[in-house]
Length: 422
Image 1: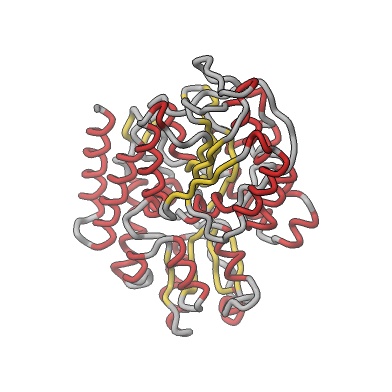
Image 2: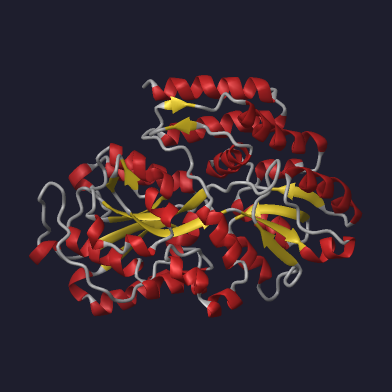
């Protein structure tokens, strides 16, 4: 998804020192104390500046040079390539991995990433919900690097003309999408509805906002067969059926949906904060015309899925101490500030959300902070990849009208139960 692509391009380095992180199996690298060259695997660097930033690291750490390995832009393809490589064991190319927050449980359960000592990282300085994304069965297996929460972007200029506030409920969103958008030649509402990871996120947000859940515990309980889940999925299906969600949105990922909004074709858009920053930039057709609020729900504020990426160390990393030192650089406060100012990505450091200069430059920060603090993770499961594929397929069928919402929820419960029994 877009936020992990963007996270890959925002790896910036300034200095702190972290030493003594040794692999769980006692393996050290060729150099003293497990230090030496590294590879860092991430989704594609679309901005082209990551290479030059890592050149700065390499100049000051000549014995710990980092080679960047760029994987495909698609989160699904990045996941597939990482898994293929990690299954190679000692032959793996990757030392440090920039992973989607929902891959941590899967990678930890498979033994592909090593546990990390909590006292080596400034976890108490992070927004509280992000730390949970880096744990599995009570142990820390990664370090939060970028967080994220979905926002509702809207055409402020149009709502102001109509004398309307941004919607706080689904009913208000539906009403404005049906009645206001057509007056201005716009489509009503879109999210990321192509059957890929983005649809899993949008579906989970709809279910959570209605008060439901999908899985319980570490993925061992299926909880989706509920009235709340049916209400959430029906909200999305009804939008397509009634036309206030355009059928074109069934092909949207993050970038396509952002472009539709930026081109002036949508009244409302659910997306990550990067979309607000890009659409507000000089030269954008909607610059100065947009706003951002928390996601709506049936009766008030909705619930976002907690997004972002974590940094993990391969269980077979050649130089584990250097890997830990690099992660400490990437999660230091100066770097986290640059993650926001240069990448428009939400940092994990809590203090940055209250920095007056940053709030003035990024006025959505207080809203984003509130969204992150109330966000919920996607369903935790060591078989998350399979879970996500099922959610995508079933919800897409409901949205296209291939099956009713009632049938879709029952099917979802059956297929998730089959995964949990494997």
